[in-house]
Length: 122
Image 1 (tube, rainbow, N blue to C red):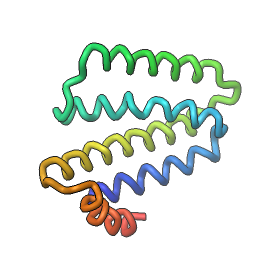
Image 2: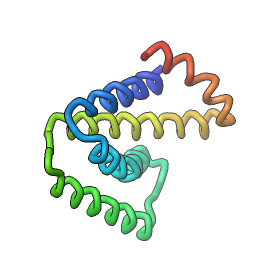
Image 3: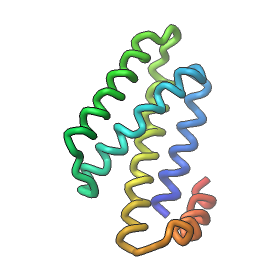
């Protein structure tokens, strides 16, 4: 059920940000999702980032920062909603990884268990 909750949060804030920031800017901000996911996996001690991975993620972060500076119609509320959506997505991915690896679920088996929880939370 927590995975479904975080998926619902991801969808809610991910859709809400469309009211405040442009579609093109949302797509640019979505490039930060791997950064947030890597941080979440590291905090959960499921992944130990290599030097190459960290450098790649820093390059992505720099590109995302450059696009944010150049955005003509920047809106803090829309940016915050997008960030909350990405954090919820990263937490969902970490929890799914734990479920699939520790419980030895096949990905389709995991989907069988996750889909009803996501539907209830939505």
